[in-house]
Image 1 (cartoon, rainbow, N blue to C red):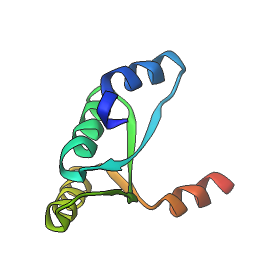
Image 2 (cartoon, one colour):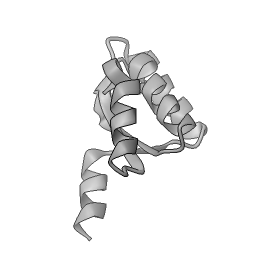
Image 3 (cartoon, rainbow, N blue to C red):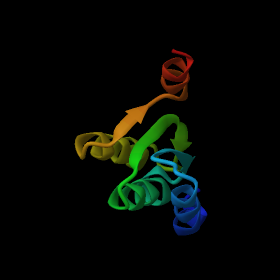
Length: 86
């Protein structure tokens, strides 16, 4: 989603989506940018911490920590799957 975030986010709005799950590469770049864009547009955002990554482990961890501290929901795909099973 990060490579075409504006288009993808617009498609979500047209289909009544309220929550966006985000996974991808470059946690500190495209993932974080997409998460912020989606939140700025009023979506609930969950960053799937086991579905994101980066070449730089330190920047990856720092980006996840920053997103958690700025009130993004950060969870594993398994945690989300368990919620959906309820």
